[in-house]
Image (cartoon, rainbow, N blue to C red; front, side):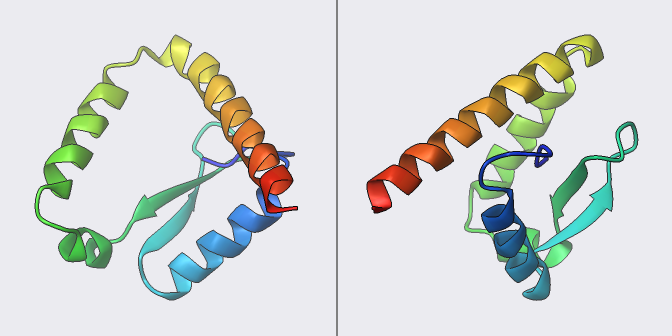
Length: 95
């Protein structure tokens, strides 16, 4: 999920555009907040994944589903802020 106003949203959009064009991901609207877009792997991407990666994805999915709905917004806020901080640091390092 890409948060609105994230400092690197343009770069993320371009990356997702390329991944979507290559058939690796698909976008879908967030069911509860139209400001967000959900990005999910396509069956093509899942089939092409290295051995063992599917088990990792399944484990992460189970962990994610175990998070109570009331806490997801807090976690999403944290991850969004962490991603923005990482993008800002990467921009500084690239200069």
